[in-house]
Length: 61
Image (tube, rainbow, N blue to C red):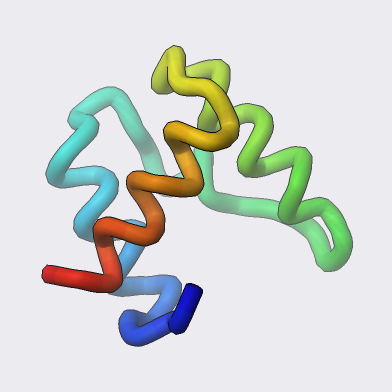
């Protein structure tokens, strides 16, 4: 997947799409990105492949 949008832009877009998300949901320590993605998956009730697809879609807007 080509990353076309900054992480900041992606967070804003996700927060608009899913109103239950907070800035805190996107915080992670170096090397803990997978844990953050797992937490997002749980909070949004999406499988990891579904979450990956959502992030891919953000690149096309």
